[in-house]
Image (cartoon, rainbow, N blue to C red; front, top):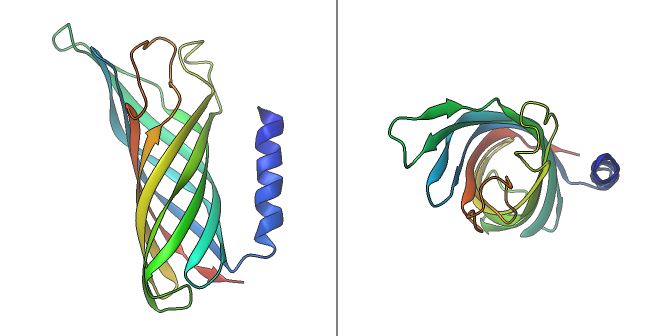
Length: 189
C-alpha cells in the first residue's frame, strides 16, 4: 500500500509541473455507514490538502491529495440508545476530479463548475480498530464548485464502492457515503 501511495504522490507532483492552477484548500466532511441494522453516524471531520488543475478552458482534470480526519459514532438499531464513539479515522484521501465549466471558464473572474470522479482513502493508523476496518476504501463522487477571482468553494458527495468493514456483512454500494466542503485559493502557475 505504501508503494502505491508513494507512486500516486510522485505522479501527482510530476503532473503539477505542467499545471495551470495550484489549489491549496481546507474544509469539513461528514461521513456515515449504514447496514440493515447498525449505523455509523457521521460527525464533523476535516481535511487539508492540495489540488492541481490542468486542462483546457472548459474541461479540466484535477488530482488532489488531502490529509483527512473522519469522525463516526456507532448506533445499534436493535438496542435502544446504544451509542459508541469511534476514534478518528485519519488518512490520506486522493480524489481525481474530472470537470467542466458550466458558466465561465478557467480564466473567468466568476465561474461555476461541475465535477466527479474516483477517489481512494488510505487509513493511516489502524491500531485502534484491529481488523475491523479495511485500510483502503475506494469511492466515486460528484460535486459542484464556484470560482470567485482567486478563491474557490467546492461541495461534493461521495459513495463508497468497497466495504469499509468486514464486520458489516450487509453494507452495499453507496451505503458508506460522505459530504465534503472545501474552500481555498486558485494560484496561477
